[in-house]
Image (cartoon, rainbow, N blue to C red; front, side, top):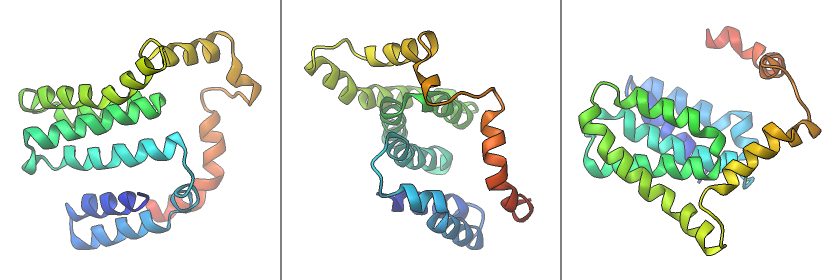
Length: 175
């Protein structure tokens, strides 16, 4: 499953040229975080493995069809049920991909999204729970009761201050 990242990077790079495809595929294959986390079953990894193929389906507008867009919607919705924190990024991806062709895109994307939500709904119902009550409970525990702060907390720029030392080496080659 971790090879999905390499395949999607190749396909996205291929839209520009074969060289872009080779570089994108190579970077995706050796990027230390991808290599380190790929064998670990985590919601972040599983969510990305669903979002990336959906992104490829959405950016390949020349091959849009009802089934492809519905599949993209199902993959995106499933990713959000696995890792609900990805919802803003998924929404941004869907809006960015479909903003210029709303009539053609939104209905199959929403229909596929409904199908992508079904496994989570059915699992909740099978457990005797209200569908998606776990999301509300997670938000309540972390925003109201501040449970996540037991692990650590930082301000709005906390991620930047953590990531910059690791990414600074790459800034010059990337620029």
